[in-house]
Image (tube, rainbow, N blue to C red; front, side, top):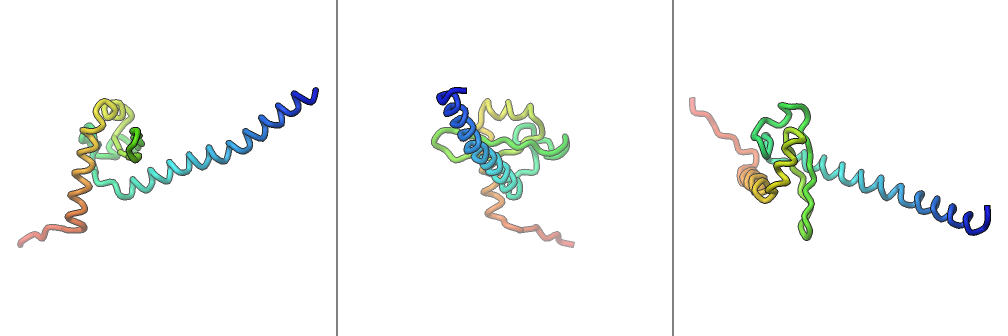
Length: 115
């Protein structure tokens, strides 16, 4: 091995060592973002199909990213609904926003039944 290839190999190893924790951190951050969104998600049904979330297994999270806008996490009943969501995200995000606004205006409010 000559000095040039040794330096190249060393730099490559160093770059990989430094990038590895950064990649792990990014994945952890997305997982934490999804967990936080799951805890406060305002809908109990699939955003696209209106099926109960969990009726087809665990709800499938999708992190919607749009340039110049914050990330949004939505939950659907299956992977197929993600494709439908991607066709018109604004339509479906309005549905989430409306449900979130409704849940904020009625926090913990339960209707009393008259007996």
